[in-house]
Structure formats: structure tokens, C-alpha cells
Amino acid sequence: MSNTDNILPSEALSPPTALFIPANLISSFVVYSYPNILRLEAQGLFPARIRLSPRTSVWSADEVVGWMQSKIDTRAGYTSPILTIHDRFLDLKRLRRLVPYSRTHLDRLEAAKRFPRRLSLGEKRTVWLEREVREWIACKAHHDSPQRPFCHCSPHPET
Image 1 (cartoon, rainbow, N blue to C red):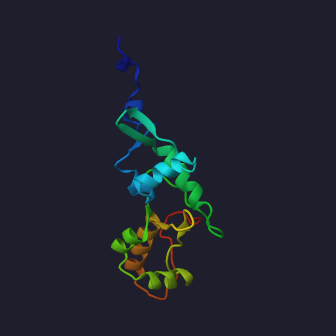
Image 2: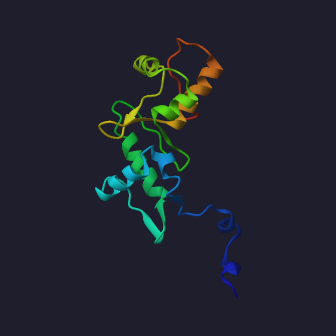
């Protein structure tokens, strides 16, 4: 009898519990360059790589999301969303691909609470949560009112 004979149908359809982020994609999640990620890892400030072979490294998606969650939880006066593997941070360059406003205009909108709040990853690095920016875009398209405060179109009133 093989091991596959003992698997329940619900187990066969469930997603794997351990997901990995390959080295070539890690920067798109956390907006740090690969050398900077390695520097942070060496300092114990970022999750450690898992070496699959001498030339292949991956990161545990759970550990990376946990690191991201710890960063977003530091925003004062804000109820933090619970992050998943589908969440990413956006730096200003990536943000401006979605929202073609100047940095000054984004600062004004954020100060007026009409744009998602940024968070700090370090002394010189600020990012936005992509999910919040996309919710803002959806709300903007739905309400199309420049004076309306930033709204969360989430079905959960506490987020």
C-alpha cells in the first residue's frame, strides 16, 4: 500500500503548509535589494535563508510575512491588517506606477488622511502596503470624490 492511499480527499486539495520565496523574487516582496537583504540577514534583522543547494536559496514565506507584519504593526495609532503571502510592500518608485502623483502630493493626501499611511522599514526606507493602495484606488474609482477621506473598502469594519 502506497502513501497516497492514506491521503484523505480534503488533504489532497489543501494547499501546502510550507511555502518558499525564491531568491529572485524576495526583493519584490520587501523592496530591499538582494545585497541589502543579505546584509540585514547577517545582522539578524531579516529571516535567514534556507539553502537548498550551494547555488539555490529560498526564504520561508511564513517568516518573511511575519517580518513584514512586525514592521506594519509599528505604525502608531493604526489598526494593522493581518498580512498574507499575497501582500507586498511598495517603495515610492513602485507606488508611482500605480498612483501617478508626485511625492509632495502623496504627502499632502496622507497628511489629510486621504491616502494610506506609509511605514518605516529603517532610517531611510519608507514603504506602503500594496493591498491598502489598491483598496484606495478601488475606493477612488468607486466614490470618485477628491474631498472624501481615505476609506477601507474591506468587508471587515475593524480593518
